[in-house]
Image (cartoon, rainbow, N blue to C red; front, side):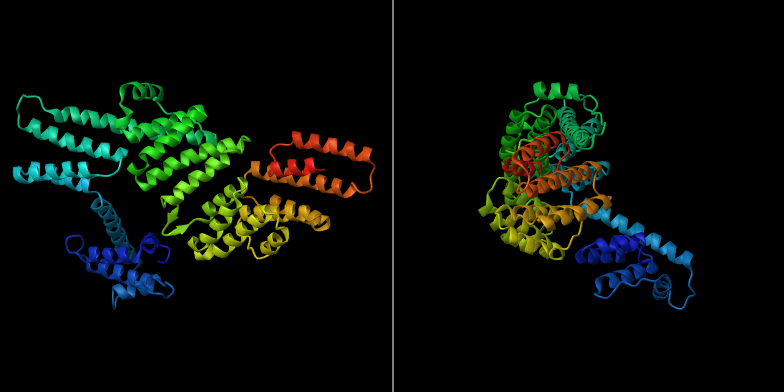
Length: 479
């Protein structure tokens, strides 16, 4: 049973949730089936212990049905019941966290039972929840729409032919929900079309843009305002739109849930990445500033840990803008915020990047020897620093040897995109020509040297895609 759906899901739950699920399973309101309780107790006991989980089917069956011969059909049946119970528990926990929905369904029930006093109490509670809810999101519009739809039904059930504002409010909140959600989906579609060359089509988007820009007071609807601006930035790629987006993030940032704000920052970050990829390296400043804002708002920490990918991106950006003092401090200050299993590797790799950038080539090479190559990005990154360090130290023999092993490494790895593989192979081909020309410069004539240099510059200008093109351009200029 170790790989059953029931056990796999239970293993993902924190201890506190496992305890709650056990209490749920033992509640007679939710479950009266004793074998199911015994199965859940046995699995949770195994998962919670520090021992290796061993849930062989026959052993589990004997724990649940003492004295009976093994019956796989019977075990599968109670496993299925336990999984259904677990799914209901997870749904219940999600519902338990949503006070809007709890109040909405309580109001509907009170109305159907004709308990006017209780009905009024739930109406007041929902109104208070709306007033004190601190965030702006599309879901809030939807909760209001559902609430006003019940109030409208209550009015209709009174059979009084008079004006009631709840029908208008129901209509308005549905419009707001539609605009917010539609813009959000349109932004996602357009972003994926840019990043993955997809072919998503956001229907009615032109009409929506027209209505949003002319028919809505955007200042009253921050969530609609910000996704409308993201859409404009994605469509036009204009720096003015990006600046407006930045201003809106500063203005509205505190109104969004962390996961919403992180998504909004990601759109701004992707804009900077596209500009950087198009050669506008000044956007590294913007890119790093976005990361600093995410750090300050605690948006990058998952269960208290900073991902090694974000750690690496921040260091790379700091080095690109040559803010070496801040970058070195960041590397050391955030080491212990990395997960223990990747901490030393990520720290040593990024510190070696810093050493190379600050021309401490020997230190960089020494530190690279301690790195365990866990994936292609670390492998290519580490070998690139090694290659550049050998070049700067004029260690041409180990450089040529590394070029050959580096090429094989890139060729053998299937996880790289064709674009990235081609860019890296082009880099190795040109660096080899640069190194050989530099070696020959001491014994060939000036005329021959100049001819080969012109040819090399021509090859460089015509080669695309090309990794580390800035560094290659720099070393060719030095020749």
